[in-house]
Amino acid sequence: MDNNTGLEEVLELLKADNPTPLISALQVLMNAAMVFERQKVLGVSPYERSEDRTGYANGFKPRSLSTRMGALQLKVPQTRGVEFFPSMLEKGQRSERAFMAALAEMYVQGTSTRKVKAIVETMCGFEVSSTQVSKATAELDKVLGPWRERTLGATPFVYLDATYEKIRRNGIVEDAAVLTAFGVDSDGKRRVLGVSVAVSEAEVHWRQFLESLSKRGLHGMKMIISDAHAGLRKALKAVFPGVLWQRCQFHLQQNAGAFAQRLEQRKENASIIRRIFQAPDRIEAERQLKLAVEAAQKTNAKFADWMEENIPDGLTCFQFPEKFRKRIRTTNMVERNNRELKRRTRVASLFVSESSILRLVSALLMEQDEAWIGEKMYLDLREV
Image (cartoon, rainbow, N blue to C red):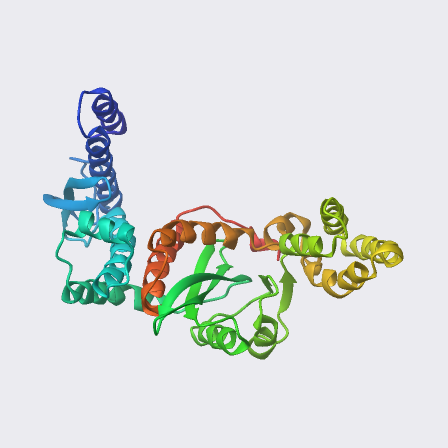
């Protein structure tokens, strides 16, 4: 099957009077993609003779894959002489299983909303037992646990962030902090480094998380980028002393709005901060900061004091080449991932345990990490 044949078949399915054209089209695309992936693993095209081949095609195995659109009937390519399993199946099933396990766990424990109950009944069937949930989560943990504990390496730039999910603990709805670490490794590729779920962002929890990264081999950091999360700064000084810290410039601009004396002054304050950050070098940035502080002292002393104390933390990135600064001056890369996590966790809305949150977030982040491995360099670190 070639690319054109697969595309023509998909277009015909979408145009046909078919009650489920999207499912049929998706089946064709997935089957074609799995065949192409097998060819890449084998190192040869169909019927091609080559001494460089790594193995042989060995037919197909039928497999039904449940999705939110319905069941897909797939033909999974088999091989002989080399191990092969289509990456799209494992990736898709992993996050889907984690998602369903979280919902089913709520359903079994009687804490689910009507919406969650309906989703579970539609996708899992009416009978969902604690035994089924335990089996599903155990299978997931066999994969996700080792991934969270895998060995890390040299990572010049590390991004830290935290977001919150709702959890019912002892009959009370509380917030649970999801601590995440991302990085740019020595090859210039983005990577997910780790994730942890804690009861808060207290220093002790950040320290435990950072120590776990260090024990797994994280080293070679040139700078750590984050917002000023509660407890994080003290934890960083304790675990990674001497590593430069860049406070997220975007969040600093947002924080400046809190010192506006009038509503329309919020944009003015943000503009003042942005002008400092857009300076061509640190010398000019510090000059702009000095002028801004002097001007604010006359009309808004609290804003002046805040700038003088906090803005220097956002200037650390000036120690690196200008072409890097756009991607190391904020936590925007992390924020985009957090929005995607929220999109998936919003359906559950309320988790019943920290392990349930950790399982779902780990599955999603594991897929993101695998996707980044196949992308081009995020930063060319040869000049650092």
